[in-house]
Length: 151
Image 1 (tube, rainbow, N blue to C red):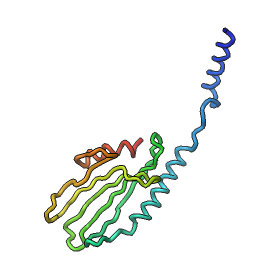
Image 2: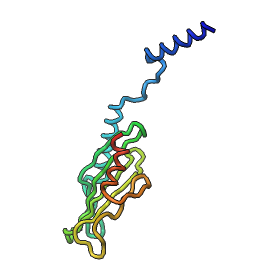
Image 3: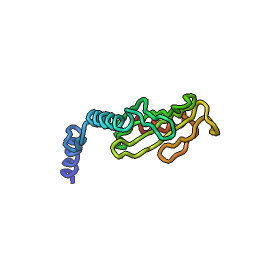
């Protein structure tokens, strides 16, 4: 009994003082961040870099983006700022933010608000949701996005 206990104690101590008992991470965190950043850049350039004219007399384009590899979720997220402006009446525009899982192409959240003069439409937020949870303001959207973009 004493021998088995001593042997177990030696094995446990050996695990703590060597890395034999721990599986090495599949990939280095820096590699994941780099891959995520590169994938986000490709996706941004593919979808938004040139602007997308619509048939309703407006122009939609993304002004910037930010990527983040979330190690806890093992996902690559990208937050894109998108602007839509009316090309006929420059006084009206929409500012939107979209949170995307880059690798899966899934939208995790969006926030949009109107500014300027809209006929028959109220100004302010018109959509606010992150991972199927509704929000009421840009501040709430930003708080919910932090879960994905800062961990």
